[in-house]
Length: 416
Ligand SMILES: Cc1cc2nc3c(=O)[nH]c(=O)nc-3n(C[C@H](O)[C@H](O)[C@H](O)COP(=O)(O)OP(=O)(O)OC[C@H]3O[C@@H](n4cnc5c(N)ncnc54)[C@H](O)[C@@H]3O)c2cc1C
Image 1 (tube, rainbow, N blue to C red):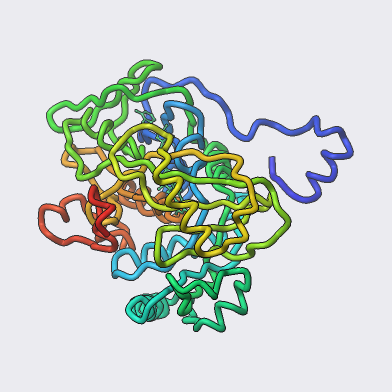
Image 2 (image 1 turned 90 degrees about the vertical axis):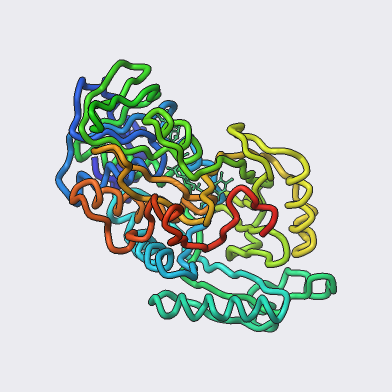
């Protein structure tokens, strides 16, 4: 079924009785050509691009819960291409281009809103760092504008420009940055992959990985064994646990990141804004809630909920920057489990087992990467060679020393 304005109108007139489920609920077959472990954003986009770009459709996505209930539906929805280092820069640039055509591509409203992102700076040194970053973004073909204090005041008049502790010197404005509705991205990819013949198997946890003489032969699941010669581990915060089933020890630690949403308010924040003197970023959702977050809780954990010291830190940073938000009531908060790599950059690579692939290390920035990550992993699985925009995301870089030190904080995140 194609979605369109006409379909919405006609269904409205007919009592909305003609809608069909967005994807099938097939039982797992005994064997597939490709298995993707993990039905988050990255797993679903990989399945979609395997089918769309490479004609590989005998594919199953195995998800232990429901589609879109992991980090893909828990994040603060920021989409941007403002990375500094070669390796990340071209990858996120490619991803943003895919975002810009995503709704048409998937025939699904993911509510991608390029409302502009402004990273504030509060010192001369920080201005220099953002000027360099802006130049790197421009060199990559993306957009960046260095704003002075008056330029920021014009766009964000509600910030506290009088406070002296962290005076606002200016901001790096990325007009093509913005937000998207997070779970709609999972649903859109799921529906589009299903339409191309991919089986999406929910409530199917992978409990073992079967390897014979160094080659993949399949997996064990809570719904029985499934055979496949190609398997991809795309499980974000659970990467270390699932990779251990294949005898691998990954350079990944799992940490909690929290998000917060207030009651619905009239439109007041029409950009994405981030504070430069504490970790705090905020936008306003289409329902009116202020959506904001901060840094990781500073301990490794698999619990999808956070702790009060970080709540206090985030609220303090928000109040310092824009005291008006103190009037709003926080309605909801939650946590997600982040796959933190030692250099803050991801991994899309073959594993040491023949036919096994690994996609992880998205840290707390993997939502914006969803389109390009699936595109590049599908390319690697179909052709055997890394896609050029993901060629530096190698697993062995931690052994060879070729780090992509975007934010090399890893397990010592509090020290950055
Ligand atoms: C609070 C918060 C805020 C964030 N904000 C942003 C942001 O603003 N911008 C941004 O770019 N990124 C952001 N991120 C990061 C981003 O959400 C993640 O990097 C990204 O979603 C991770 O990839 P994923 O979507 O595939 O993960 P997930 O959705 O977590 O998918 C992994 C899936 O694997 C499944 N799985 C795990 N183990 C198994 C198993 N054994 N068998 C079968 N299935 C299994 C899980 O159930 C899960 O559904 C944020 C994250 C959080 C938590």
